[in-house]
Image (tube, rainbow, N blue to C red; front, side, top):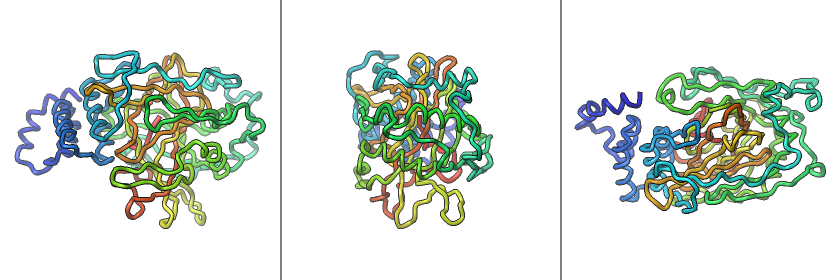
Length: 440
């Protein structure tokens, strides 16, 4: 399909001559990327870079998505022309150039650092994927069936009503306060600690936020209820190379959220980043209750993307209705940091990493930093604005492997967003599958 679009470009050009639509640089770049005319897009992007015209976040996210530069199953780079476009997009957005300390260069397009692992395996980690493969996840030695349901459906959306339309429905499950038994602080083997991701501005990992036992309970709950499939029903999303993970949507209960927030709070920025136009700066206020628990099987990958912001999901205190945005108009909250909670470490051969891409010192070359998942750790990095948001990929999982991860968000006061709303293009409508809001 991509080759067909490229081959019909001459006809497209003739039909577009004299048209007023697409006259702006932004629109012309979007049109070129949609038709996979990466050389044309690169020329236009370079012009935008030379004129120092910053793109809006929504445009940047669309461009990145249209590039569809997913790495191959063996970890080698995707389409080189698409990657060159990504490099120029990041330079236009003002992303800080990385270092020059690299260990591998592939086709002069991507320079890869050695995989970053914050620490070696430690005592007490639970090999959750191995338990799943051996069908021992619910072994009586580490699982007892609850006497009453601990999760209930709080929202259901048929696939055709999702945005974009999906082949599968989406269900959000709310947890009761006793759904996940939290480990008392005095019984924890290790307390949380922070490590910055080398060479990736704004990204850091907080170790030991959750205990292995807590991670196991979360996975048991997700498997017990069941993971849902995610596949676009129509549109350009069907042409993309991502093999989407199965997911379990969880609206976390208040005690769990408060405990999570108290463990993470000492390590996160007290205020949101302030953009070049003065947006941001609000105080940190909590964690989004809407958790997306993902299961990545062998070869599953999420293409390079930039996360969008999310409002604070919750339940209406009077009706119990699920609300995509539960914060009151007088005190709006929006996310500004992605939180990825790694639930297992037993992923084969250094695969299944979260890989960040930054422009290198050399134009046309991206620098890739892969972060190895560590059980119970939380990877944090900024999103929600053109400046500072990080391009990243959920890289492919190796043979017979699996990765289990939660995606949620750190919430901040929506200070500096005009009428308390983020800029256009930030976030998604209720019920969407969040093509701009996912991350792993």
